[in-house]
Length: 192
Image (cartoon, rainbow, N blue to C red; front, side, top):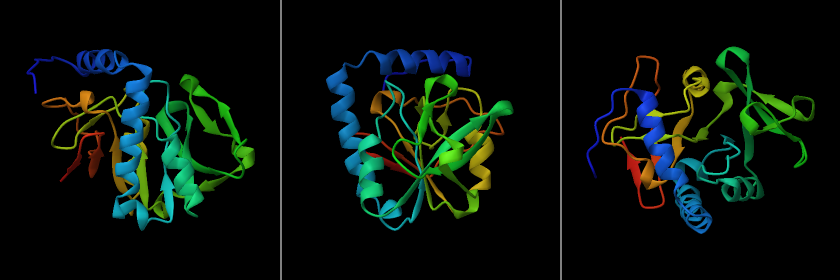
């Protein structure tokens, strides 16, 4: 892994987002497919009944295939709904059309067409990230939604989905940053 010196989270975000955005559409698609296959094989997901996942933006690891296959296997799949002040909650849509584009251009469940999920009921969480390191520290976009929400999910395994180009030698962390239990890339699975 090439060595870079960063002085801030903002520098790390820019560096990794530039690398991620340099991938072509076919690369993103192929690598996302490989990530979904690795995720589907995890016992932590096979044994989970209620999973919090995400709706990807254009250059994040696309877990749409995973979401469909989990729902097709009878799993309950819920998604984040964000609010002001960095607050987040989880909702399970009652139908495929129960989504709308919300904050940051991300598809979120429409609250009126979805069931609110208590954090303690979630068995597994699939979350995006901007960067990660071998110690399973995760760098997000900086709003802190997941870092505020994850501590409430006492029974959930936390799994980041990322491309291998998103790995850094060391992610700059603050006291409030929550590490994950696993990081799944197209090439390998990182564990504690």
